[in-house]
Each structure stands twice: as structure tokens, then as C-alpha cells.
Amino acid sequence: MGRVQRMTADRRNDGAGSPPSEVRGEAGGEAEAWGADRWAVVMRSLLAVLRSPRLGDQAARVEAERLASDALVSLRRTVVAGPAGGLIPVAEAFVDLRRELAPLVRFGRVGVEFVEPPAGGRALPPPVADAARSVVRIAVLAYLAERVERVRVQWDCDGTNLLVSVRDDGEGTRARSDEALRPIAELVERVGGEWGVDSTQAWGSHLHLSLPLDRSARPGQANDDAAALAGLTSREAQAARLAATGLTNAQIATELGISQNTVKFHLSSAMRKLGVARRVELAALLAPGS
Image (cartoon, rainbow, N blue to C red; front, side, top):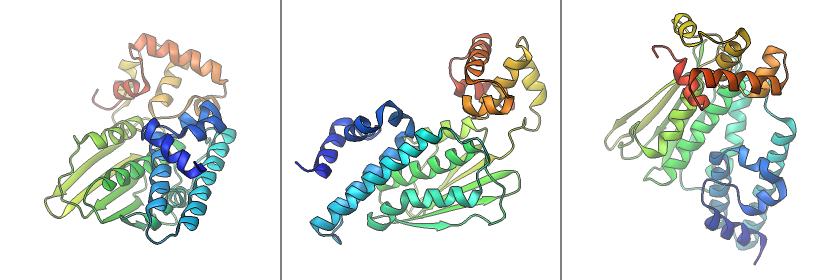
């Protein structure tokens, strides 16, 4: 059994939400942190290549091996570099998204049109860039299981928010309550954004998001924060606010000028005092109107 066939067989055994065993063996436990939606795009791309009527057996094998190799290289770069600390130009984040989806667009059955964000748009905090890319990946993967032929992906900026739009020409039955979109709700909540789905039967659906670009407290949140964070030390409150915006421990450490271990200590203490067990719960607690 060849390398491509082994990966395909591993995928059937492992399920769609985890990296193939061959990759886990080479990259170690860090592979699990790369993102289930990202692995799913890689595996869907491999299957699209292997099933493409435009490629002969040898050409499909070469293309599939190249995709697998690129995935490993990208994973290793992510693990070595660690979480991004600085702002990411919006055009660069969008190019990364297009690169990730390129094999699916080239060999898959769903056509994807990309509308570039404005060249002068504000740079994105890493959690916002990651959330925006993940949302589009999840949406495109969901459409692959439906009667959708065309998808239009657009990013825009209004000065304070990244605006993400994903339109399809499907049956127009998509709703916020769909199980396939549940991860999107969690991602948007983590960065303090808003999202919705507008559907018109027989005309398609429109998934739209607004993700705030400022890490500072949102309008009207100061009093809510003060009440929610009462009883915390100053450093615990700072760490909790930053974690609620979606920053990682490494990013919080950089922001506050302390070590990651110190961040873990303050966050653990803050979450225990606030009676929450997960960061999603922390974000919900500090959301406006909570």
C-alpha cells in the first residue's frame, strides 16, 4: 500500500476532525493544536486531487504527496514560531486563506470566488485573523456536503471591525442553529464579535460576521467588567480581560511583560474566583450585557 493510500485509509479510521496518523507520527502532539478545520481542509484537498478526472494516476499521486508535504512544512513552521504576537496585515491574512483553500478550489466541485479586502485596511490581531480564516474554512467544508456550486468569500474593514461575508448559491436553508456552524459561534464569541445567517429559499445563504479589531474594552463594557471582576487582583483582572478577547497565554505574557507561567497562575486564580472553567465562559461573562 502506497503513501497516499495509507493516508486515505488512516483518515477513514481517524475521523474528519484529527490529523492523519502519518502526520501525527512525524510532528508529535503539537499536531493536534493546528486546528481540526485546517486538517479537514488538507484531507478534503487530498481527496479532491485523488478523485479529480483531470489528473492521471501518476499526476494525482505527485500532487497529493506535494499537498501532504506542504501541510507538514506549515505545521512545523507553526510549532517552531509559536503563537503570533504582532498585528497581521489584513491582505496577508487573506492571502494565507486563499493559499490554504487553493487545492480545493482547483480540484474540488465547489467554485470559490475571493473578494480581496481593501489594501489600506487595518492590520488584524492574531486571534481575529485566526478566527476569520477558521470561519471561512468551516463554512466551505460545510458547503462541500450540500448542493452548492458557487461560494463568494469577501473580507472588508469598517475602521473598527473586520467584516467577513460568505455567500452561496445553495438551497437557502442554512440557519444559525445548524450543527455544522456551531464551531463558528464559539470562534466569534471568543473574539467578542457578532454573526448571523440570512437565507432565501432556492437563492442561497449569506453568512456574515463582524469581528472587533481593538483589544480594549468594548463600548458600555466598563461597568460590567468592574462588577464581574470585583474581588480579583489587578493582575488577575488584566489577564482575564485579555484572555476574554481571545489572546493566548504567550500573547498575554507579551502584553503584560510577564512569563507564561505567571499568566497561567493569574488566569487559573481568576477563573476559579469567577466560577468559570473555560475561556469561552470567561468571554461570555465579560461580554456586554452579561
